[in-house]
Every structure is written in C-alpha cells, then in structure tokens.
Image (cartoon, rainbow, N blue to C red; front, top):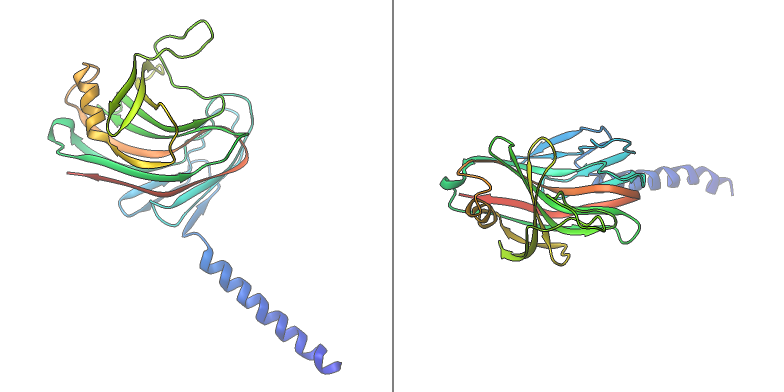
Length: 240
C-alpha cells in the first residue's frame, strides 16, 4: 500500500506530461482575443477584425492562412459585429490580370446565429467593395439601392450566372464606397470562384473601370452568435 502511494505521484506526473504534450500537438500556431489581432503567414494576413458597435468577445486561432477559425459570442442587437478573415493583397490592374480564382471550405453554426460566409474584394484604391455571399443564416442581408414594402433589399439583377455560381446582384453604397453584393441563390460551404469573371461582369455593366484590384478577403461576417464556432478549413487565392 505504501509502495502504491509512492508510485502514484510518478504516474500522475507522467499522465500530466502526456496531456501537456497532446495539448501542444493540437495547439494552434497563433491565437488572439484582441479586436484587431492579426497574423502574417504565407503571403496572407489573418485578421480577428471585431469592429462593430456593441460587439462581444471573439477569439481567433490559426494554423495557417488557409486553416483558421473563431469562437464568437455576439449579442442579438442587429448590425455586423465582426468580419474575421484571411486576406491576400493583389495590387494589379483589372485589365492586366489573366486569371484570378479562389477556393474555400468552411464549417459554420446551425440555427441560432446570424452571419454570412463571404468574400470581400476591394478595387479602385478601396472605392469599390465587391461582396460574394457564399452562404448566409438568420437576419442578414446585402446593401442595396432600394428596399420593397416589406423592407427586403431589391436586387439590380437576378439569377446571374457568372464566376461558376448563380447570384442575385445588389448595388448600393455604405456611405463611404460603392458596394456590389453577389448573393448566391442557394447556400454552399465549399467551392471555387472565378473572381476575374465576376469583376469583368461588373466592369461590363459600367459600374467600375479598369482599376487596381487591391485585395481579396474571405471570412465570416457575424451579426449575432451565442458563443458559436466558425471554421475555415481551406482557403486560397491564385492569380496571374
């Protein structure tokens, strides 16, 4: 009995060492609870980006620019609270791009949260914001030029097939810049987008010219989330 008592602390210590090792193996390469915490990796920048009024706590983790996620606890008070994202700077004129594509794969919460998984593409020295809504849930909607009697945004174009997806397209302004929102007609959690085709479609409508494509971002625009988890399993941007 006394021998067992002497051996027990060693066993406990060994178990703790194994547990600590396992935690280290599965620990993320980077984590932050700072509102504007960011991390550079592989030519991208991962941002926590908690910017909205009345925002709650949010912690971001990342193993790479392609694999990252957040736990976000946002109140149901309306208005976007955060846009955690991975960003790739481009800095090339639209007319000089031969290709610009991106792929993504996400895991998002079920019911009970309001959010969208979307691309935020900036052009013309940030004069134009192009949002590609890949999925959405809850009380969220795009910026538009007008709204119907029920308060729903009115699309400028419907059922537009471009860039490998079918969208309803909205044109509006947030007061600082033009916003062109492409909302998929059905939700998807993974896919590839021909971003260049979308930008050329916009240019063809006369909404913008041959301007610099500043950056491509992908992430989660979160309005409300009761301590919910959002994960980007894969994301990349390719261009030439």
